Image 1 (cartoon, rainbow, N blue to C red):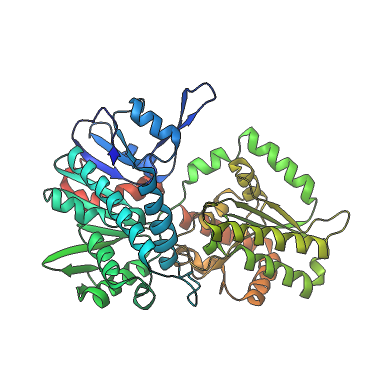
Image 2 (cartoon, rainbow, N blue to C red; image 1 turned 120 degrees about the horizontal axis):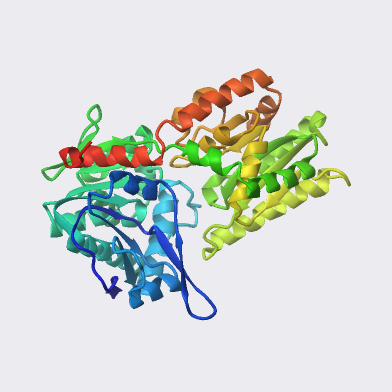
Length: 483
């Protein structure tokens, strides 16, 4: 069952659909609802379209506060339509399929001798995922003006484009994948019918967008291998059952203006002072991640430990600042991974630490101002995911760094396509090579480090969030958008 916002907005010419919306609500002790506005590329991008074009954002109610605001008609914004999807249906769709299946497939992180197991419980989860996507399609169909443009976001809503097209063939529909895309051999871990349904779902769009050409090509390869679709790799199109879907490549960049301003507010300055006191005159290796399996935090710690073992000149001369924020702790794999991060960091501190030197400064609570302070302090940025759709940290850190930082970057991050030339590149599985890369970065001459950092910052902000969104919209909407 789905309860939509009681006051249905007027039909809109531009619609955005995503699991998480631009606003969330907290239930206070006295029962009142406190709204909190979100930021990010989608918010700034939708704002950039302009007030003269009617827009609607369709999202899911994620918290009890969201559900209460939806049921009571207290969203306070007629341009937001929040779907109160049955809690069990939502949990099975979000945790069971989106985060425990599609995310695992696209990031290649299954432990394949034992997982996945696609049995009867999985089929129940899949039915919920279908219902979740159908709820979005129906809400979009209801809210869209004739010929409107709809931008559907990410792996949570892979089926929505096809379902929406069946309801409203007049619409211009786009889908954007913020994750990597698995190669055919790995993608075929999915049951055959579901592998087809996901691809056909996205091909219901007029345009399917990706962060890099690598991920767009992998999607095309899967369409060819699984569906027998016709693929034009030079034109980046996929034709299946008489319909052609364009593939777009839009590499999301960092918001340089916002980051530079935000990084010099008083709360960041105070956290920077605390970090400087803890670090002293030592060099810094900084990483900021969620405790997400694909981020490869544990191997990064092992590489740092290997650096200290094999390069004793760095003993008491470097500190690894690792801010690893909790992620998806309702899934056991993520709780276990966070525990591993904590354990390895403690082992390093126990092995190498002295009364005056703590080799690893680890925090697992979310503090954006503290992250920006670490960005400013960084001599070396470590970004070593085993697979990542983009990784904005790799783009943000060079923008904020006070004195210029060297970037140690995994070749499996989407950001590698734009930043690889000026980064120190690593195979994320090779701990020894990563340790050597850290040494190379730490010993890089200051002038070279500053020059590289400047080029990294320029490349990383080439397509900031509002421009990234508008680029997709213009590609899809064509002459609907007034320049």
